[in-house]
Length: 90
Image 1: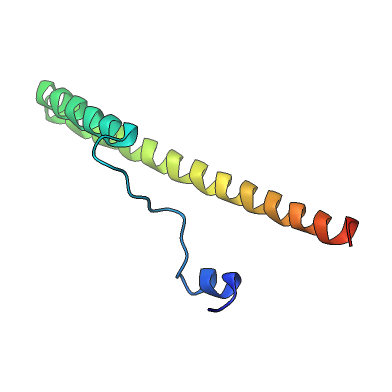
Image 2: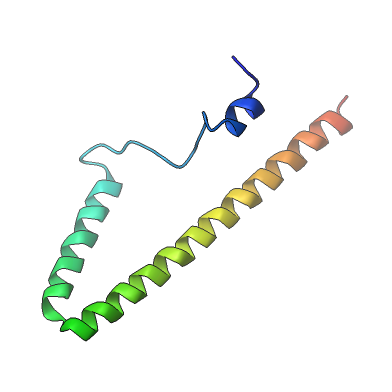
């Protein structure tokens, strides 16, 4: 096996996909979200549907930015943590 850095660089490691069982809280929340969206879309006219889609797209963009920032912060923390271990305790 290559080093973990090589594997990560080659795209063989990833932390963005998970399997959730059918009865998991995540799947239950996703189903509830989909049900609510379908009910809401049925109540809206075309202009309202377009506005709601713009809203959900903006929300998705914000979540993507937030997740990326969390990833960067965690990576930086991990690097600092390892640096301290190798410099302070060797």
